[in-house]
Image 1: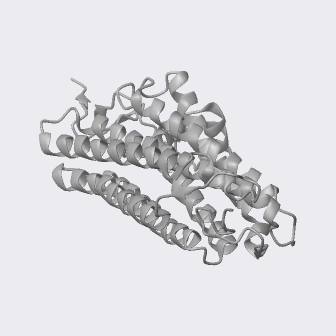
Image 2: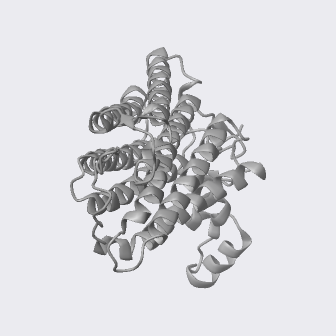
Length: 349
């Protein structure tokens, strides 16, 4: 006869787990961040589809794949949380379904992390491919190889964590007849967390290296530093999520730590997708500023006597100090949301 604690969490499947206050607002929280990430992906893909900025590329495919994984993550979190009764302790009959959702959430998290990091690296590679600095390109390739290796390893581990495979969640069914053997999930959580943090730091450090290697102006440096700081937020979220996941597998305050796993994993995944889509906001901003509605609003509320819309809005399609900027070439090829420093500015002869 199987032990009552013969499961991946070593949890007594006859004792209810407490309902924690965080469950009240997690669904709204996850929906808000998911909606923000979805809007960022949508505006990026629509701009590319209607040929504003660069054409569709590998980075867009990777971002879309990451968004699909983030969608699966959001749906699984919502299903797990809505299966609970408001204010009522989590009853043992629901353990199996929640464990199944936990397994699906972990797999979706691994896939989303991998595709998002590869998308960011593809954007950075597009930025530096016009230069002769091979060191940064090799650093990008190394980061991509590390990301692919870590993601594949963690995905395989998700499928091999327990024998039999479905024992991860079926072990919470007291009538399940088979003996379940699982690897040390606490150690696996630590290894996965270390891989995630190291690859995050490696990926985040590349924009900083670019800003140090090229003669960027202040706005470009500021944009790269912004990407760097957002990447650090994602890295911190990854570390905190790993801690709470480790506590879940220690069977320590399972409900509480599981809630915080979802909270921090949502930050990690959705904010990372938003970060990857940031460059396309420059194209969107240029479209809005150059629109007829924007001109009418500006002339109606902000214009001064003798002032023109061009001089106030900074319209890049005009001429400045005897020079004209070719805006058709200034797409979002750069992760800065700016044309690279070597882009061409032609003088009027």
